[in-house]
Structure formats: C-alpha cells, structure tokens
Image (cartoon, rainbow, N blue to C red; front, top):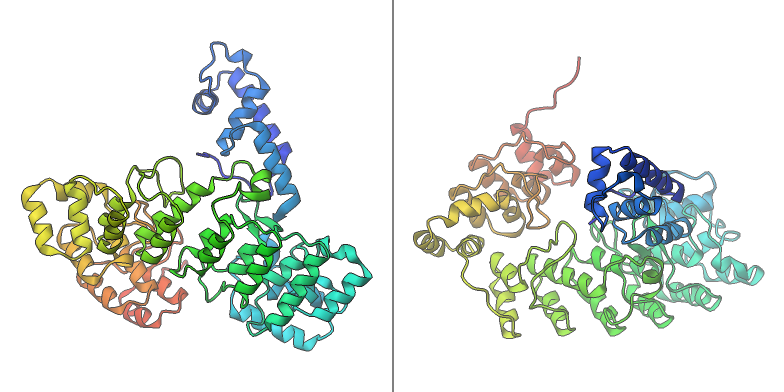
Length: 511
C-alpha cells in the first residue's frame, strides 16, 4: 500500500530529487531514512549504508507511492504528462463565449456540477447562438451536427486535437455535456458517429488530477458519482451512446464507472458492460498505460462487498451470475472502505443483518460461517431482534464488551443503514450515541456522528430519537469542522435544519 499521496501535477524531476535525497540521508545514517529503507526495500537493512545505491533509493520512493518499481512509476508519470485532466480549470471562467459554454456545459466532477451550472450554459448559448460555428469543442458539447461535420471537413485533424477550457478532444465534450437533458438522441449519435468515423478514439480518457483511475468516455456516458445522480447524471442517451462506443471498441473494463455507479442500486450499467465482456479481458489500453491498476477480478469483488454491505441484493445476484467470487474471504490490499479483513461475503451479509442476501449466497453454495457471538450480536441488533440479542448475551456475556471495543463507531453506520429501532437498541446496549465513525462503510474512522447523518438525510424521526438518546448537536465532524446543523443546511434539508437550529449554539466570532 502507498504511504505517500501523489502530489498535484507530479513531475519525474521531483521524484528523482526525492530519490537522491533519500540516498544521501541513508548514507549519512539518518534514522528516518533507514526506517523507510527497511519498510520498502526487499533487501531490508544494509550492512553498510555507505553502499546504498541510487537505484535502490528509486525503488524505495516508487514503493512509497504505491508502485512496484521505478520503471512503473516513470511510465505512470509519462502517462500523467500526456493524459492529465486538471480539474482546477473547471472553476476558472473563460472570456471567450465558446470556451465558457464548454466549461459550464460539461461534468467536471468537481463541486460545481449541477443544474444551476447547466442553466448558465443554456443562457450563454441563447445569447451567442453562433458560438459553435468556429469551435469544434463547443459544437460537440452542443451536439450540433452540421457544425461538427463542416469543421471536420475543413480540418480533419481536429478530431484528435485537444482544446477548449479543459484541453479535451471533441468527443469527450460531447459525452460529458449535460447542459441540455432534452437533447435529441439523433443529434448526439450523429455527432458521435461522425467523430468516431473521423478517427476519434473510443477509449479516450484523462487522469483526474493525476489519480491513476482514468475517466474515460464510458465514465462520462454512465455518469453519477459522489454528488449523486441529480448533480452528476448519466448522459440522457447513455444506453445508445454507450453501446455505440462499445461497438466501436471501447473497453468495458472501466474502473471509474464501477466506482461512480456503485452508490445507487440501479444495475443497468453493469448489465450493458457485462454484455460486452466486463471482467473477461486484459484491462485494455489503460492497463497497458498504467500497469499498477488493480485486476478487474478484484474490482468486481469490491463491488460485491459494497453491494452486500449496502443491501443491494439485485447487484449481488448479477455479480454472482457473472462469475464473481462470492465464496472466498476478502484479503489483500483494497480501499479503506473495502479492507482485506478476512471476512467472507456471507459473513458480511449476516453481520449487516441482511438475511435475504445471506440466504441467496447459501443457496448458491456459499458455506455458512461458524459461530461468532460478536457477529451474531451485531447482526441481531441490526435486525432489531431484541430476543436474539438477549440470548447471545446470556450465552456469551463477553460478546457485548468485545462488540463495543471492536466497533466503537457502529452507531454511525447504523444511522445510515438500519432502522430507528436498531439505533435505539445499540444505544441501550452502551454504544456511544456521540461516537465518531463512518456512515458510508462499516469500517472504523473518526469522521462524523450519527446526528450528522440523520441531519444530512433529512430524517426527522431519527434526529429526534438521537437527541432524546443524548446526541450532542454541537459536535463538529472531523473532516469539515461542521455541526449537524451545518450538514442539514449544506444539503438543503430544511426539516432537520429547523429541528436542530434552536439547539445549536451559534459559532463564536472573533473580536
């Protein structure tokens, strides 16, 4: 696992300097440098630090950033130099109307995305209806078939030319455009077809601020992401456009699509990608460009874990039907929200009180786990099954203390995934109603409280119950330094904001 984050706009010279600095520090006997060597170099400690070579220092630096070797790091940096998408460009207004239209019309995967931004793009196009006549990137974003066709006829090389505010190629602007959700399929497919016929690459993609998972054309087609489908929707003609790109050779193994679409239970994107061979190929051109991308077998297993933990039985069935391993324990490196903790899929289903998914996995041949009083107690609590909780406690008096020790933030997860009855039961069992945890995944991280999530979700019943149980409305989350009231206001949840406002002290002001 990497121990260092990739810097913004990384350059090979910076990593060369880091390697030389490490070499000098190791030769000088610096304790921190020697510890880095022991942790990341396969040879471990040296008998004579004075013999530490630059190639060894380069290997240590590469591994600190998550790459198996220095050549793999350098190859990645070459890919970054060619394919980086700098998202900061999305917040910088452009003076030229065509450039500004492109900036406003397209998904940026920044905080600016949403209907208000697209409305400004529509207004700008109405004010400058001819802005696409000499600008192929604006013509593509506006899906103007005649302008795209004429510009390509005049200069065929425009199809592969990067331009516009984001330095994208024309087809990318078409696919990421969202300013007109009523645009006709005929126009969109006609523009896409002309660009592909002229030589546009169906596997076009860019690295979002140098992160290794590429945002491809398919990523843009399927949309969604952390801001939700209201602000990052799929393309209005995603099915036809996606099929067109896949028929043209787009690789279905699209890691960023899997991530962006996992938050909602809709599986239509997976159905299309499986139709074209998702998980059966070698990873396509991006796997060649970035050799350290994970395997798709593992990525699909991560999808399986998310689906189990977030009560998505349809996705679990779809993944299992397409050969995704639902028997083996989760092991090895993974995202923080999908750890290699040794649990099997059926254990996770039971732990989250999901008897439907657990029953399906058993019916498909998964082996039920052996007895585990802690898991059984948590699972019973998530089902709000008080009699079972009492039976587990009676037979295993130590189980509750161990559950509280190992899962101190469990009540935060319950506030997003379970019922008011489960939250109440956990509080009665001694789980701290003011504990910090994560609401997006059942892992321990001191991020926010249960009250933050009930406020965000506009759940008045749960918010009232948490307050009755002793939740403190003045607590601030550990990432944004915001109160539950701040969360309610930020996400426009007026019912919970109204409930919390009289209970939340105003922020202190300086003299």
